[in-house]
Length: 259
Image (cartoon, rainbow, N blue to C red; front, side, top):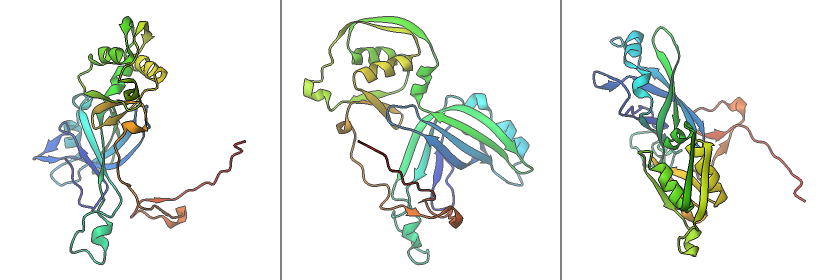
């Protein structure tokens, strides 16, 4: 795991990342991505190779082998803003303000590796990280299920993947945890993901990920309670050019006719 010297933000854990002399050679620079309930998330992580007199750019090119990285699990750790454990020795209250109150962990698979450039001292890479359920979007199948419920079909389809999943259903509990069976359900030349998502949507189900585990749920009651990641987020105009804290730099006020 690369553990930066600065007090916050980004760490990466991945057993497949190459090393040199027992130390990692890729330093995470930036992460960006999009995720939502019931959708496949996608994150891009930018790396730079280490800059050292004993480690040159040709060493990085020799050690970073995309074919050995594709499909490997990776964890992105993003530290929350401030109000964490106090660090003694820093002036004023900086010891408390610069340490995150928690960590946001994003677990997925490396699905793309791209060399984005190089200079005289470093090589730059971009990894695309997606959930394991994304693998289910890469096939096409045609099959029939008979006398089964939505959960029966889900189990039958997902058993072909070696990753964990579970259900956390709150609303269906009011119906003794029973989904009615259907006489006939067909997957008609769809990917496993398209088929399952269509079926889940029909029955009011959606999903999210708890680590690497796919959680199938049906209502707000399916989610765990959690504390606030932020007590407040400051606004700084783009001219402020603040880089030492998380903030809002652009804000639009919108009024809509709701009649």
